[in-house]
Length: 142
Image (cartoon, rainbow, N blue to C red; front, side, top):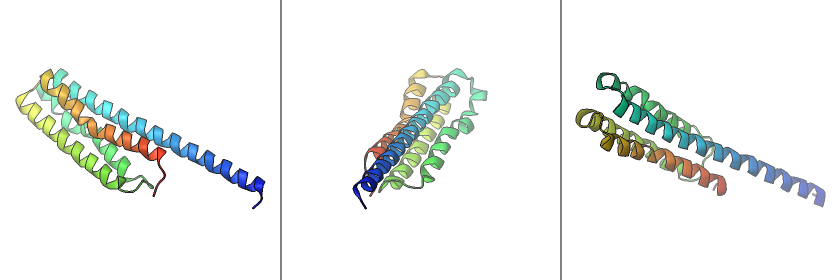
C-alpha cells in the first residue's frame, strides 16, 4: 500500500466514523423524544382527561416504552454490556410506568402532585438510553 492509498483509506475511515457518530446522535434524539412523549402522555391522561376516558392511558402510554424496547433490542451492533443495560432500562421503565399508572389511577386521579413527578421519573429510562447512545457514538466498540 503506497502513501496515497493509505491516505485514502484513512479519509474513508474518518468519513465512516463521522456517519456512525451522526447516526448515534439521531438515535439519542429519538430516545429522548420518546421520553418526552411518555411524559406528555402520562400528564394528559393522568391529569387532563376525566377518569373513565383516562383508562386508555394503559394502552396509549405503553407505546413509547414498547418502541424503546424494540429499538434497543434490535440494534445490530452495540458496545459491550449495552444489551443488558438496555434490558434494565426497559424493565425499569415498565416497572416505574406501572407503579405510576396503577397508584395514580387508584389514589391520585387528576392530582398534579402525583402525575408530574411520576411522569418525569417515567422518562428517566429513555434519557438513560439516549445518554448511552451518545456515549456509544464517542467510544470504540470492543
